[in-house]
Amino acid sequence: MLFFSFSANTQIIVAGFVTNADTKKGISAKIKIKNITTKRMVAVTRSSRSSGSYFTRVKPGNYIIEVTSNGH
Image (cartoon, rainbow, N blue to C red; front, side, top):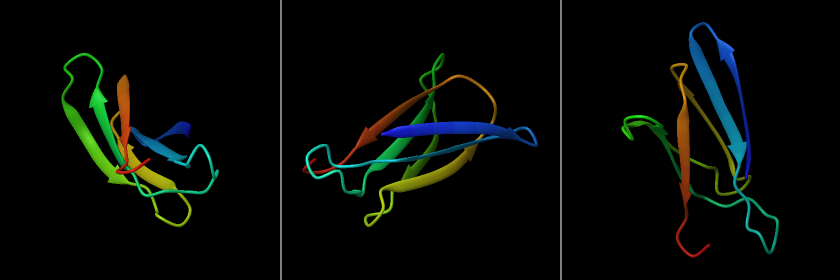
């Protein structure tokens, strides 16, 4: 999984790729972004099945990212 972010008008853009470790191809996965202090979920997005890419925006802060996918 690749993760990067940058600040844009009081929001952080979170984007990356989720790939199968064996085939190196993109997979569909659920990405949950939680506040590191409160453990409260602030965003949920899915990666593209064909490319594995995902994109979302959150407020500035410290976060935990959880990625889950059935069968991978």
